[in-house]
Image (cartoon, rainbow, N blue to C red; front, side, top):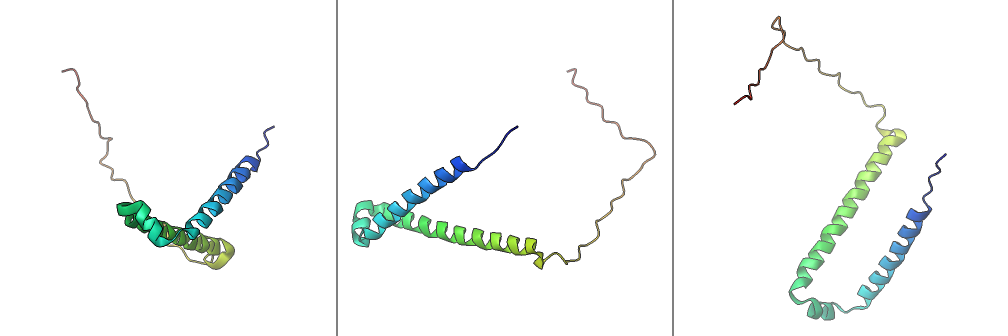
Length: 103
């Protein structure tokens, strides 16, 4: 019998969340000018990546919410199109392919 628990995952996630909060606090304490001076040419690419990450997270959250609404029955009454039936052409006998690799 195998029992699966999420204890290790939850502990790792909690530790990550704690590290994330500490990093956010440290960044909030930094003055923007000091950060620009420290990072120099890397400041704008890093900040643009942070904004792209925030937008991606917001988009993912909205997708998850839409999926949850669909699972809750909001889209369950949707009428689906019937499947497309495709007929396999029959020429009377099966097609054979001969591969000659003796050369």
